[in-house]
Length: 159
Image 1: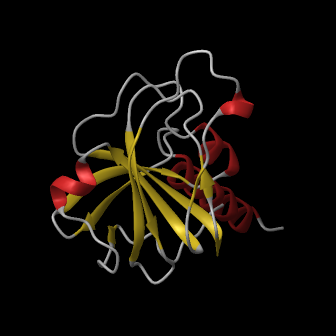
Image 2: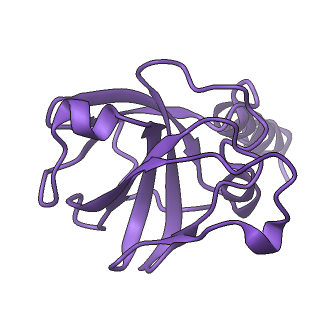
């Protein structure tokens, strides 16, 4: 391999790694659903989705977590290690709200995993947005509402 080509490939690899890794955070996206506008942390990998918001003390106002799945299919959530109530918004691949599970309470401390309530989507979803409990009602989010992501993650899918 010629030295210039090798250096060019190495630089391209390093730039790709820097852009892909950033500061080590999973990334953020602005999510808009009618009057609801939140800055959402992305959960794209299986590890990020498994961790979710578990272990955190709270979620800032106007913050959220957007779970991005590799395929549109029914999803089931639970509140393992979550310490504050949430609303779940079920979102289709065509960026429409399919429904919401509102005011999901955190489990009592010490609840075994086998006793944690499960919250299934009623239809296949590609995205699930978790926001502070009450945000869905305050913003008037309804089934059928259009969803936008800035930047657009709708074509990205899960890693």
